[in-house]
Length: 88
Image (cartoon, rainbow, N blue to C red; front, side, top):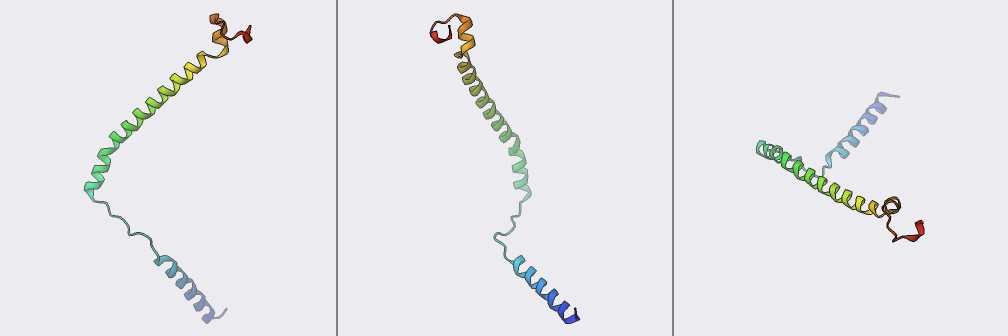
């Protein structure tokens, strides 16, 4: 490889890098200290709200699950319910 071929290769690589690096879709967003502090202050409230929602959903699911399970075969048989005669 000659010096001229090496220079041409380096220039081609440099041109490729410059062309692909220039296209940016958004400008970088700068965050002010006040915005940062406000975001940090809001975190405990957001976490608490999320956690309360999850606890509520879990309690509802468990209540529905237990209500459905109580209608299943073993518990009806031991309680003496005669509603489902196919289990005799």
